[in-house]
Image (cartoon, rainbow, N blue to C red; front, side, top):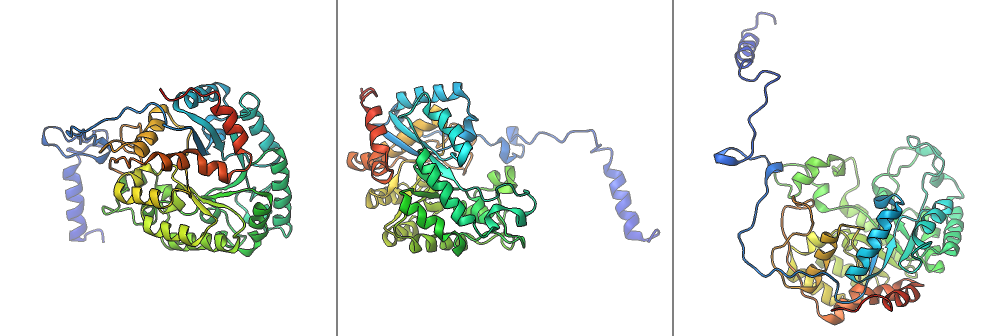
Length: 402
């Protein structure tokens, strides 16, 4: 091999390239200027469209935001909480539902954070503790594999209800992360969990469930993937075939759970995790009378299909809940009002300079007042026990629309 002519040629080529691209020399900046090539991360297009820009500073009707994460975003900072309550006042947000309650002493801690100063501005959902005191890297030690797990979880949810919990939130790790002792992923529709879903119905605890993720996250990360840039920044958000269940498997498993427990209210987070296919979500809503949907962090998907999205909201006005995935900066919060209330064209869905969840802008869907009222608060008042008292106490003090 040492005297192989092809190897010698490759070595010669490598040596001849060394001076031009020395190890400590930087490549030319690919910024797209003066005809140069452009890296996608540098792309900052500015539209030349001259269209209506509605500056909405406040929701038209009082709002219940049923999907927020005050534990994970604010880390129990009192200063951030005070500032956000002021934002809520300015924007006509009456009540937010924090989905980070957890259980037991963790729930008590979160409740003290939110309710000590603002008892009428927040509600809290509990979470299931699948691992318990088990080792993170040893699923065989996790609490969910003990014979009494479902019964103990039901007891802890009953305790959480006594402490003030209004529902249960399931995160996407359920189906995409938590494992069995043999290394396979927990199945969403495993019969072991049925007593939990049944108990939620008996306790009056709606279940908001995040199952699967955007369709692009289950596709190859290549030049055809419309969210390539996002997945390039977050490759851990990719769920390649063979390593994870398909998106269709996950959604079908969730739907089997919804069908098996008609007395339990289920809320499909992120438009039932299928905003790319509203026709199918519409079929689910028609089939499962106990299913509702929120659209947290999905106005980017809905707003690029405004005609279809508007028809969807009008057809299912009684089953759609206002949700944001916040707390967000005020600029992003106000984009929700603009999306729902106006017919504005081609505006951003995020306050960030570079689109974080899809390389496009969105359009408003101009909902009528009767639909806005249902989406903003009436549906939440019907679905969440105990919401009425907090909502009325707060809206009596909120300033009316100018």
